[in-house]
Length: 273
Length: 282
Image (cartoon, rainbow over all chains, first blue to last red; front, side):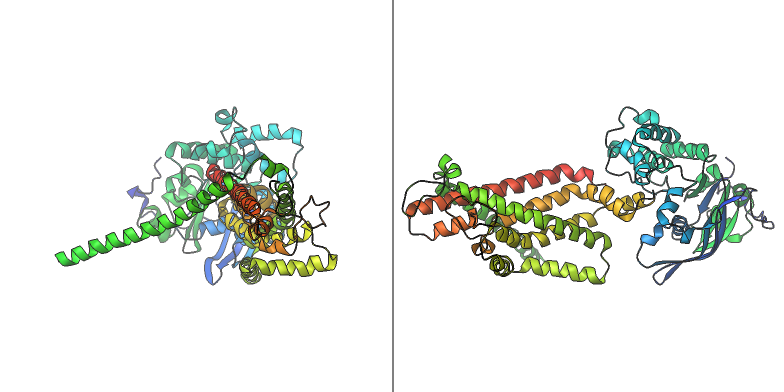
């Protein structure tokens, strides 16, 4: 991996910005002019960004820069916070997300959180939960769906003999893969991941990165990460956020080797953040 | 310097001793009550106490079987009314409570909790006994349910609020509705705490006598229905203890011991549920 942010060769290579869209693929989701407020605090300023289908897009930036807020706007989970207010347009396959039935939206746009949050239920019931609440399958189809989802999340071999034990008995890394399996079980079109590896060790992190690359042929992935090497390893495109603004968005290799903005370069070379 | 040190150390010792004594008084009160009840009531608790009806004034022997059953009936009625209302109020406060109306509801709960139990009895007399022209187990259960509602609501709210936000978001993010999230994830995660709160609440109202004095009244015999005057252990203790007969005093001690044991068993059961349940909360 020669894209490490500390690589001194990266500096001083500023060139003209690459034109968007960075990689030719139809946009699965698109945000245009998104502003976000928590009460009187303005968290996002005029964010416009496209997520090409079947690609991994990473959102990077220092803590508090708004990348999680933006991610959490895409499935409208931020609506549950009192005082939250959003302006602008977000579309999924051209449909207005903000006007869509919210449960239907969240079925299509899944989410994995920073800390593993398995329900206090069995492994099986965790994975089956989304399918059950959305009435997506018959009871008899559940075992197959659960197995398929756990296989896609690279967890099946570790849990196949204890599907009916509590999910809380699993390790942190296994719990996070369980949460991914739970998200995949409803066959989302987009999967949002909010720093999914920040509570995990490097081995568990590597497993999750591998499985993300493995599932992107079936869904579009957006991942928020603090870890720039992680963005470099898994993402096709990367967006850099700073103080609520999207500073730069381009192909990952361009962002890391040849950023067009001074702030991006300073961040990825470790001068701040 | 040394004087100051001596002062600091002796103040430390004095306060340590003082708090220790207070803690000891608190704990020993329970044991003194228990010991006194066991001493006076223990020798009177026999099989007849659980199987026979009270004997008439001045007669020896007999039991309080009708009061044990009556208490169970009244507490069951109170639970059937109070637990669902209290539980759903707690769910509302925790999950939907906005700043305005919720504050009002929470405040009313505290007030209701603080209403003297005798006043609750008067209220139940006005709304149930008077229209029915009859003292009854229903009226007693209604009165006790008014005490159970705020207890259940507050403890339910408290345990639901403790459920991490991440669990709710995990469920909502899968396309679950808010109600489905509450019913399938939030309440199950807090289940053990909620059950504990309810058990403690029921144990608390089971020992109340004042709300029953002029609602369910008393009965020397088996009551023939829920709309009849019904005997209960707390009221039985009251009437027997203020009577002039030694054998009735003996029976009152026995009833007190039985009631306390039931409450203690409920408390211990609740603690066991909590200690086994801490890992289940995510």
